[in-house]
Image (cartoon, rainbow, N blue to C red):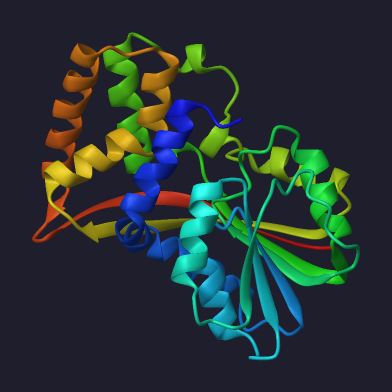
Length: 273
C-alpha cells in the first residue's frame, strides 16, 4: 500500500511532469548516449514513471520492436498511458519489478532513469529482472552519486537537516533515491544477481528548467531528499516554512535568467545479463 506522503509526491510528479523532464533531460541524454541505438525486439524500462524515457526509446528503436515500461504507481502508469497514446510500439504495465512475473528470456535490454533505487530487496529485484532478459542483453541505468558530489542534493539535504535538528548520522544507511551512491555496493548487488561486465561511470551534469525561484523552491519541497527528511522528522508547518525560505534563497542564487540550474552528480551503470 502506498502511504499518503508517497502518494502526494507521485501526484506532484504528475502535476510537474514537463518540468521534471526538463530538469532531468541531461540525465536522460547521458542514459541514451550510453545505450546508443539498441538492436533487438523487446526492451524494458524499469521504474518508468510518467513514461518519457519509454517513449524516447520507442522512437529510437525499430518500429517493429517494442518497449514495455513498468512502474509501481497506478496513477503514474495511467498518466503514462495517456501520454503515449498513438505510439504503437510502447506499452505500460503496473507492477513492482522486484516481484513482477516477467516471462523468461523476453527482453533484449533493460534501462532505467533513476527508477531502480527503491527496491526493498535489490538482489531479489535484479535477479528477477535478470530472469526476464535474454542472455547477453544489456542493463543500463542512472542513479544519484553521493550528495556531496552534486550541489543540489547536498544543498537540499543540509538545509532540511539544519531546520529539523537532524544530522547525517540520524539518517542511517543511504536509502530511497540515495540508495545506490556507493559504487561497490551497486557492483555487489549486480554480481549477486547474475550480471557481468559491470561498468560504473560518474558524471557531473547541469540540471536546469525554465522556472521561477519560487516555483523551484516549492518543487524542491515536494520532490526529493528534502521532502523525505521533512517527512521522517515529522516537520511541522513552522519548520517547513523555514526550510522553504532557505530553499527560496538558494533558488535565487542559482537563477540563470528565466532558468534555475544546479550541478548534479550521477552514476551511469552498465552490465550484461
